[in-house]
Length: 414
Ligand SMILES: [Zn+2]
View (cartoon, rainbow, N blue to C red):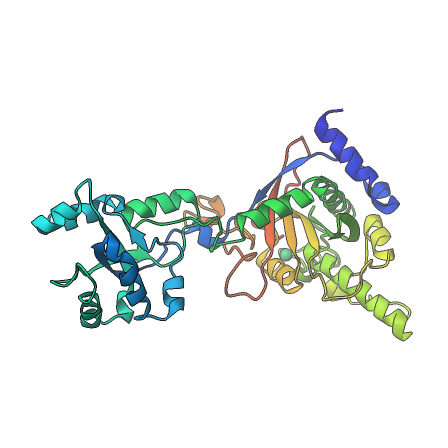
């Protein structure tokens, strides 16, 4: 057995008997690829203008102290990605050339032994030039006519070291602070990837199996979902659901029952388990009402039933708060929003749905024949959107072995 095989075997041995009993196919390791957010994929960052000045080195501190008085602190703190001060030699080439050629004095400031420094004053729109000039002219060495120029700068932080280096050449010396204003923090992604890497293949295999069961039973497309809870390194399987869109649908030229998508059914199973606990406590209904045909959220295939019968390990808290969901296919927009509203913590899917998926932020369906030459537009990247009140970390899972792909029509909404 190779290293991967051994680590899967030990991850499987650590699971409870229900999980061990359910896994029938070979479990193969996969690679977890974190999804990019819409902001990370679009470099249409906005710029704004700031005023800059320059002082002899010895006057830099008094100048900065004086400038602090001109603007509220939080305004300057709003530019953590820009260096407040820059040596003449560190300016981008075009600014260097522009300032150097302004006057003989300017030329000497840009000589090799320069003892001058450039300083950002603040956003141009918030400053009164005359007021700034007057205040600067009281600083030693700036009495004659203080230098004041307006330059464009990016308003948000760079998302990588490379972008920071580019901006330093294009705008002003910029810093990458190893945080990512455009998506989840890289350290957070790394930590979470490590956390799930050992056993992700087990849950993906279960989603895979239930997808095949659902298809074989004639209930739906070969699409499956698996929800687990992870607490202090221990994992518990909470729900397993296959697609049931074609059940009782007559299958005639329609998209099937959208409420019976695998992700919706899996979330419903979690909800029913929570209700079941409450019912036991309040001694009301012994079993939840499952005869709700539109939702098809009664367990249908064998594996779904087995998992459904087990009580929820931690029935406190809101619906799927912090849970993990493994999906054979990228969920459609409806399911993505349901996942988000259920407060899921992590989502991992195997097959991308480039025409209908809701999580991926990359451009959709470019060149796909069903679009007849039209461009499919931008991906929605619903897992991480500033304007929504919840975000989660999402990965694409690539089987590193030969796990059979589960093919569905590209126009299907998973
Ligand atoms: Zn869906």
